Every structure is written in C-alpha cells, then in structure tokens.
Image (cartoon, rainbow, N blue to C red; front, side, top):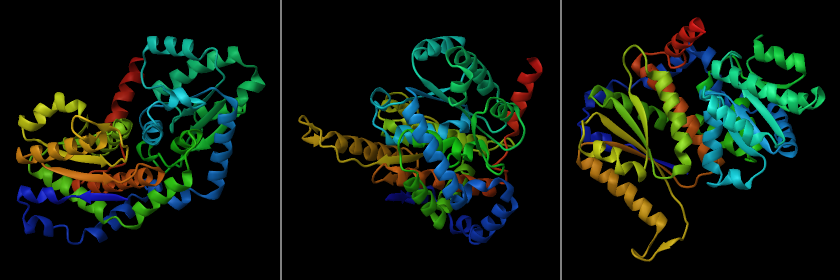
Length: 403
C-alpha cells in the first residue's frame, strides 16, 4: 500500500551511539501521549468514526449534495486544509467543472477584491455554507461568515436560510454556537481534545469530504491501520531529529503529482505550527516537481546544505505514450523523480522516499494519520508541546488590540 525508504539517512554517518539513545523510545512515547491525553483525541480513531457521527455526516452530506449548486467551506488553517487536501488528492484535476455541487473555500484572506468577485460568482447559485472555527472567533472566518450571511439573508427567507448554514465549532458558548441556536442552523462539534491542525477526521474535515462523495469508512480503515503499528512514524521522527542536529534545518516536502499540492500545504501547517517553538525547529517547505526543479531545484542542488527532502512518490498506470522516448508519461515522471533524488543525494541532500502505490481513501487516510502521529512524536523528541500555538495566539491578540 505505502512503502517507506528511510535508508538514505545512513549516508550522513549516523553513529550507533546516536541511534542507541532511542532504544526505549516506545515506552517513553506512551508516557508522553498520556501526559498530553487532553490533546490526543485525534489519535482515537474509533471514537471519531463512531456510527452516530457517521450517520449524521452522511445524511447531512446527502442533503447538501441534493440542495445546492455551490458548497462553501468557510475557514482557515486546520479548519479547511485537511478536507481540501483529501478532496483534491482523490478527485480528478477538473472536478469542480464536472461535479455538483461545486466546492469553494473562502475565509483565507482579508481581500475585499476576492469577496466582491466571489459574491458575483455565486449570486445566481443555490448555496450552502459550512462555517468552521473551533473557537468561534477566528478573525478571517467570522468576517467571511458575516459577509456571506448578509448576502444569504437577502437571497433566502428565514426558513430557507435555516437549512443553508452549517456551523462546525466546539461545544462551548461562542458567537458561532449562539448563531446556530438563534437561527436554528445545523451544527457539528469539534471535540475539545483536538486542535485545528489535527482535526481532519472530525466533522470539520469529514463533512466536506463526504459532500465530494468519498467513502469515509475507507478513510477510517487507512487511519486505523496507521495507528496499529507506529514503527515507521518513530523512524521518521528520529531521522528528522538527527538531520536537525547535523544542521539540516529545512525539510522540503516534495511531490511529483500536483494533485497533492494541498496535501503539502496541510503538512506545512501541521509541522510548522506544531514544532516551530522556543527558537528551534525544522522549517517545512513544499516543492511541486518538476515545476520547481526549474527554480528551487538550483538551490537544492548547489545551495547551502541545510535542506533534506521527504519525497512523496505516487505510482500510476496511465498508458499515455510519448513517442519521442518510447515511454509512457508516468514512466518519464517516475524517472524524473528517482534521477533527481539521486542527483540531490550525490550533492549531499539526503532524502526520504514515501511511495503510495495508489491514491485512494485508504492510502490518504493512512498517510494523514502517519504524519500526525510522527509529528507528535517529533514534539516529544524535540522537547516541545506539539499541540499549542502561542505564536499564533500572540499575533491574533495584537490584531484584536488594534481593531
């Protein structure tokens, strides 16, 4: 299903002494997870995918598909990145031109031009919005919600409006929860023990994924399998730590399949917000090759040797033949991936290679849970709390003061 090649790190002259310090890490991780159990709800997959929640999400997803032309996901960061990553990975490239309803993401900027253009785009469409904010007070989300709600109040009567807004937030009182009660909007709960960037397997992620008509049971199967054996997650976290200790301060998440662009954006948030603390941590960046080989590729090959790569390689069986080389386009893309990794390795840029045999619900579910588990383990190894984000909270406070 998924293959992990972590052997190249040995070329960095890792000593037995360096590896031996992790001999008892399994027990230490269990203690660490127990210490942070109030943040570990995302790890308990069976609870997240229980029958009652799945029935509610499936029924609501069916209603959305049958009653709108445009489904608008309003949120920022972890509120939308997880679902967008899954939806774009599993659909074909032009799904929004083919499928109904069309899925749009809004609330990631404060650009008035974007909102004006978007309202003009949807004004003749039947719309349903899903407003996602765990706190219920996120600046970009609440502003977008206010603008869309004004528009919808003009478009729909109160009874129609009630069925066209869905609120996803935590279980505490907050402005979004109050509106759900006031207007009778459908609402879903993000559990209190799950932070936004770990919330893809809560209703925040699962409802939009279901609207795009994907099998949540298979997503669960993959995530569950990733929980059953975490040896590769531990290896990956250890390798990242050893690279960091040897001056590799940037990790490039590299893809050769652009359908995974949003998956890389999700990874960047997961690792940056979880581990960039106390003036330490590896900076995550994303490269979409072969496009970025014609720009960033120069730096990777000959620039400062502070980068290591984690390549997410995909296999495909498309038989689109390129006569010039007597090879399929997939074969050429595969050659580009492996030859570039070899060239970078010769230049001193180490790379992990994760190969997905087939992109489907199960493999994406596995990979997302894999990275969340490994990220939490990295927090333990680096000595930081991988579940808070005081830096983000600080800038939010400054904005609120100025407003």
